[in-house]
Image (cartoon, rainbow, N blue to C red; front, side, top):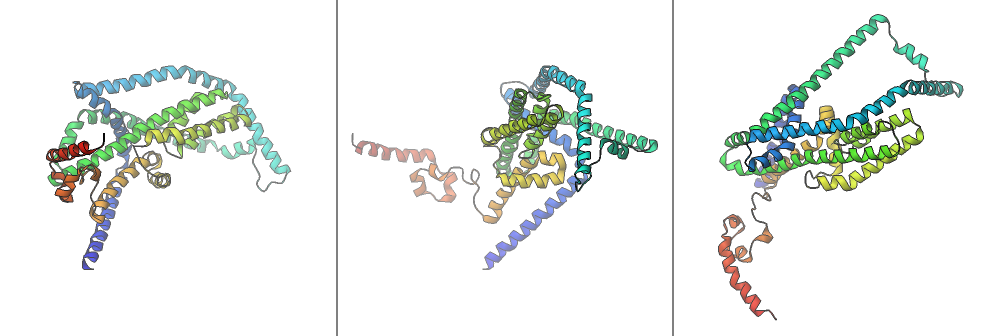
Length: 405
């Protein structure tokens, strides 16, 4: 009884300590949250490009040169994609620009018709006409000038922040890729010898989960973007390539992104075509997402991040509330990190069971029968399997000679 109470007390203190540490780290991270977007971009680039740089290094290419080659290949790839897509996007944008006065006139006529219908049929809510909307939205000259200056300042601030992210992110990723072996070595030197194997084991699991997530999501986004673009082209939607690319980009946010990516296509269909085209856009997006949810994503992400869909939804709500767009983008890898580390610590310190892959180097069914007889569970790591194989050989020979021919 006393031992059980002591274990409950240790568990309670352990949970309290973890909560306090998480709260302190979260408060510090919130104060310095401005540095996280460039770090997130740099981390994603490191996870995506490190396998390429490492493979080049194993073939005798210096790490600096391999990093330059990887970045150059990515830059050339973006330039080629831009060169191929720019004529299509420009022609579709010119088509929409030419039809813009007609589209605006149709939209204003549609709003005025709804306003007249709301007055004629005595709707509970009066829908304003275009003239009423313009009167309410048009301020005086001083207020209009102040709002324009404020809007311009907000746009300039956002553009500056985005520029910092896309400039500092690749620079940080470049230096991290070049010095990654030295950084790893310095971190390992800070880890006590008794915990080095455990930390290395957890680092490998986190690297596999997070790196697999980023690489898998990038591949899935590309495939979904291609399928959506082809489907929208088949139904004759203007700006089909732009809408397909938006759908593919938003697909990197699990569960929520696919439906958000369908909104621009429906808006373009209603503005340029008719309701029938909007329904066809919804059908195309639904078919693409069903193919993605049942075939593409399970195949690509099966071994990367193992999370239940309900856990993914709760993670998106939680991290999206905390971090906005970046919280939604990183909800799955952050939750996978918490799951891996928290599960490992809980199994080790609370439940008191061995960790598969670390405390049990060999699975039970791989241990020879003689080893199970001669050694205990604690001595499995010290079994001489060469000697065990020699002991097993006469037994196999006897079985083979006694078996009927």
